[in-house]
Image (tube, rainbow, N blue to C red; front, side):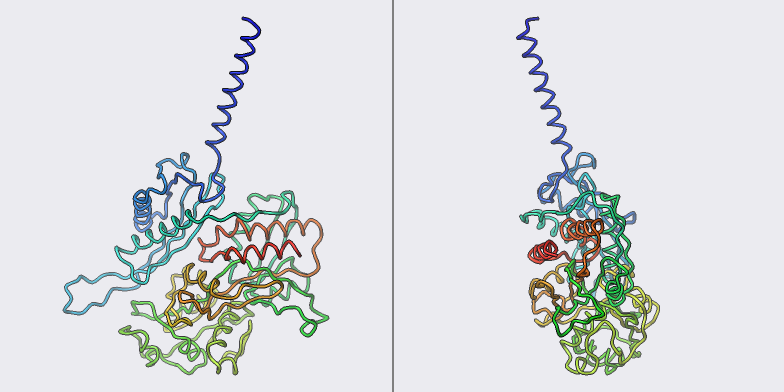
Amino acid sequence: MPFSLRKNIALICRFLVFLLIAGISVHAQSAAELKQVKSLYVDSLGSDKAGAATRDTIERRLRKSHELRIVADPHEADAILKGTTRIWAIGRDSLSPHSHRPVQALYEGFVSVEVVGKKNETLWSYLVTPSKFPWGGITDDLGRQVISRLLAAIKETGQEPSLAGSANAVAALKGAGATFPAPLYEKWFELFQEDHAMVHISYDPVGSAEGIRKLREGEIDFGASDMPIMPFTAENDSESHARLRQIPMVLGAVVPIYNLAGLHQSLNFTPEILAAIYLGKIKRWNDPQIRKVNGAASLPDAEIVVAHRSDGSGTTFVWTDYLSKISPEWKASVGSSDTVRWPVGIGAAGNEGVASVVQSTPNSIGYVEFIYALQHELSFGAIRNAAGEFSRADIASVIAAARASATPQRDSGVSITGSPGRSAYPISAYTWVLLPEKEPDGGKKAALSELLHWMLTAGQKSCSALGYAPLPPDVAKRALEELDNL
């Protein structure tokens, strides 16, 4: 064979090999962003009938939308949608005796979903609860909401923030503080450590006040609080306390939970009602003020058992900050802080403690973080917001509260309770990571920096599945800039 022919054949073979390798690499490439997903596999959303029905609704609506190609084999998909469905009965619809409609069961619940890429990275997540006026059954309502949010997210175009930091950081990091974001932080740290095997993170949910104390005393590397610290000034400085820096991480909500047997609808609360209950001025569930905003609800002639936090708590700060804004009497007599002198009620430690008290005590009311109410299948009410609308906590109403409020500025916090937005949930709040002014050693500094950058970028995609709202893009950008300047 002539040399020139052998040379041409060799070049052609190399070219074919190149095309083959390129084709394989393109086929195996994982979607880095949600908008790159073209084919989707819908995985199980639960082993019960509710999970199967919700999955069927999601698949059917996705096919109808023609926005994504639904595949039967997960290996053929750009990404996988997976999650959890939890639905529980809260009673039966009480109809007029003259109605010809059959009595219908009433349900509460949620669907939590994630879209994950080929490398098991979260591209998007969300959590939905039943609509105010659902139609077509609860699983159809929840599935429809998931698809509406997913398709809207796919159409959004926005540049992903860059992830800075050292990929080779080696350290053991200790944190402590707020119980409010503890379920999310547990998941975040687990996900981060999957790709950063040389970093070990421990977090102790001891409450915001104790977390701040531990950080000031140098017992931990980072703290967490739902209570924004005061801006540093010469007047509020103390020789015994080091200066702290705060970085917003995520948004959440505090909800009023209650335990009323025989009540088959979600209660409405006005700001005045909540303040009066916690001041001990409204003592019974059938009080005229409660009846007035709850129509034909079956309210018992029973004493209200009030539950509150007994420990230093950022959740308490959020709750009392709201009550101080809407009630001059509360502000003057009780005020807002992580611990207050409660006029009435019984105390319990942590969000889980309050949730447990309410769950086990008939005719009780308490306040917990939104996700705890869902996890414990507790009833929680809607609150009349500053625009006069009764708003229930969910991802959308918390984001609306942040967008209608001031943006956190450098080295200072911001309260978004009582937000003026029409769709805003009024007891929404940022939760913060706190850092000491004195930087840790080199290894811990690199690892902590990389962790916080990850939480503000990739981590934001996975927070909604647990009932937390991601930071607005401008807030996340400002937080990254602040982190880089520390």
